[in-house]
Image 1 (tube, rainbow, N blue to C red):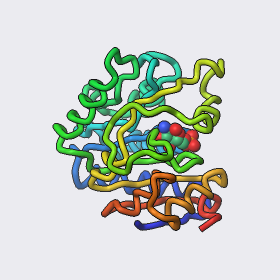
Image 2 (image 1 turned 90 degrees about the horizontal axis):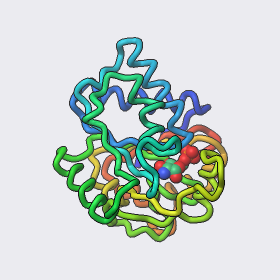
Image 3 (image 1 turned 135 degrees about the vertical axis):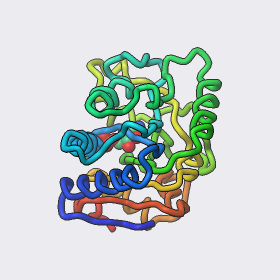
Image 4 (image 1 turned 180 degrees about the vertical axis):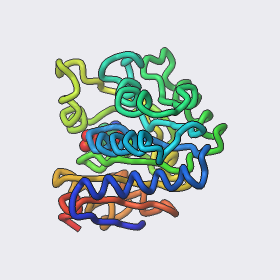
Length: 241
Ligand code: GLP
């Protein structure tokens, strides 16, 4: 696990974007694993800028997102489909048919999880996975106690996570209770992985991930087992290391 600490969030974001673009340069048809959440917003903004400046082309790339809320259709304002479309996809030259997220409006979500995992495998696997971290150490929606070998499946969200994500929903009752998420094992199977964390609210989870025992109590700690994981932090997120 390589840990890179930058003076501020802006520098951390620039570093993460540069690492992703470097992958595109060597492999234009790379398969990227993407994450959502507030932390990723400035990173996607940066990628859009690099694309506008002619420094990044996604014309041959494919993407798989980590997760989606169950019970929320792709066109719902709070879906991760909408987040990705509005924040990144519609601003870059990616072929929409090569962007993938699990479908939250699934009638049979167990089948949808298996379909998604099989689709990742059929793509040849993820070359570069972006990951964020929840305050409780979750990655994707792999909440504490998630099996470290888990694949894409249904997860029940913790109250903490539902509270943390409440800001995106008008009505607290609308916050989904379940999600489809790539598993910890799916994330460990990626060829390279970059976790970006900024801000002091992440400091405890970051310390547990980097310096704590490998444990399902902190799913992000499984990244210690990843052969090529880079943790990109600002000083605030690194405060408890
Ligand atoms: C959600 C997402 C995660 C993300 C986390 C942190 O739970 N499913 O993928 O890492 O939020 O989000 P934020 O960056 O807003 O703190």
